[in-house]
Length: 229
Image 1 (tube, rainbow, N blue to C red):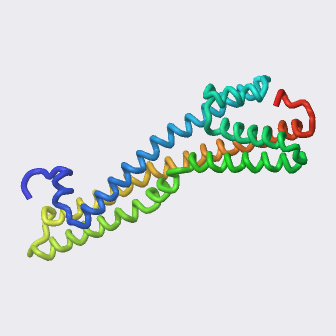
Image 2 (image 1 turned 180 degrees about the vertical axis):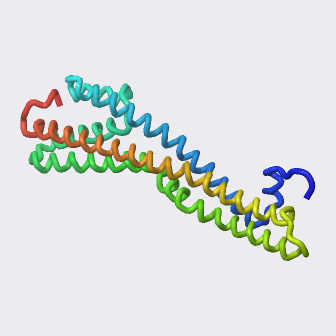
Image 3 (image 1 turned 90 degrees about the vertical axis):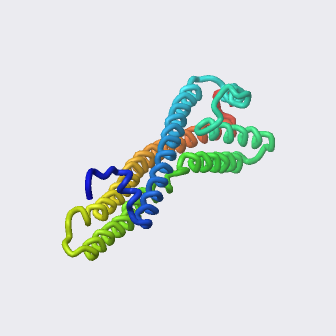
């Protein structure tokens, strides 16, 4: 083999199996990066909105005014704000029915749990894909590695005297397939662990807020001081 061989030439000269594996891994890598970028923006926005909404919630103003501002579109309507809106609307509805305070509070809690579950589904979307790509990409790369090694042995068997030039392409495609598998897996695993930790923190924030909101509504249902709810 004369001259140098570029990366592109090695890929083009690889076996069909290796090329299919490389293509699948590159698509998986692109998909994981799309999820990573989208998820990073979503979690950052959710965290920022949650902090801002909590500051307004605990500013001492009327919760009725906060709800009206949210209903008119002056406040975010996702994440923590959505849990608040659903809980406040159910509280208002229960007040109109004159239901037993315990039953009314249970209904408010139920609606907030449902809203929280829906918000968490949004935040967790895409994480299973990252976990799948991170766990199986190295094994998928092994198919390409096997194909490259087979090609190297075939090249040895077809010549009387084995030379580096005859086995290098097969070995190179095997290493490339392995490298692409790791290239797809490593960012996906790191991002998955990072996002899971952030989602857990946000979920704890949602749960804490729901408990605080429950306490405020409980006092309102029993006729206590409730900051104008």
